[in-house]
Length: 467
Image (cartoon, rainbow, N blue to C red):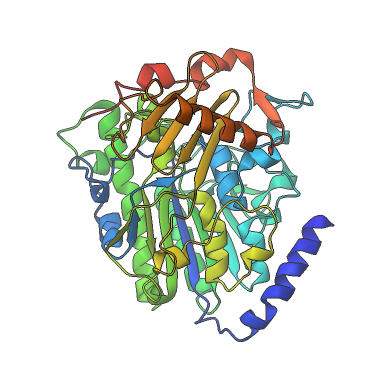
């Protein structure tokens, strides 16, 4: 009931604006999310090893954000924050929801997902007249009640869980768990032909062709370049100078870049590019141990709160409204996508209680010269982090807090906690005050998995920084 009332409010508040808009005036929105990519593993981010010509071309047409952050250093919570525009800890989504985790009520596996009282950006866009679709990875709950088609998406082609093979399953390796199986719509399980990254792009192109007369929202949620490390022989041949995981990662990244290019070219072909808002980003920092990704010049990796775990590449393009080939250097968050997308669609995000993201358009258009955020926060179990202007505090359960000035030291090498004890105290108290607003985690990591997954901080904090 609460869900429906809020949606009705948004409809009423946005009705008079939307009623005067044609499908051509409301922009299409294409949100492209890569998975586990390294911060430095794109040409537009400075890579000399990897080939990403399509994203490099998009970067020249975009605003590039030099300090874009996710709200969590692992996939599931990060995506929950994106979909809701809220710090996901506010509704207890603090850990990944995968088999092997146990909820506080003792439930394991499929029963964990994005709480049903949380309304997604897709819900709101549907009510504003958009056709909505998700292609690829969901990772917001495997049980039927969490299904994308029940969370605001008209169409779904992908898988419910957090990872799966890029190659088709056959009778010998078809998994029984639904989170790994490819699915079209609700409950229609199938297998694809060819390489999954390509298939997701083909599905997005089909959706564009079928909905080009309507405003549409595409969430193109690649599992690339998440493990398993699988690439085609043709793409591997493009990187003779590389070896091992690094070679495979380069090939997987090239395949994703090519797939993105086919979608962008279809928008051009249909005459939709000028009024399509496109965002490309990544769901968390690269897991250097798992896929040999490169987060330089940042320290850290996926699953920790150093910059390499939470700062991500980020591009935004909307030719009809935004300047191109421009840099934006204030910190932003992927939580900002919700109100920004809603604003583009002429919705009213100010009527939604509890949003932590902000509409970025006034900042990008020069109407507001301030930083969009005074504070940004991160938390997982006893570990936490807070950023305030150029200062960042890292809190640990087993050793003293660390303090860095990111303007002078983005690699987080020089701990200044001893020199600025009052700043440590100030940020520590602010972080604690924020934590008092949060819910208890709905589920938590089983103890036997803790050593591997919960804290890669010590092993990768400095050795992963490639100067």
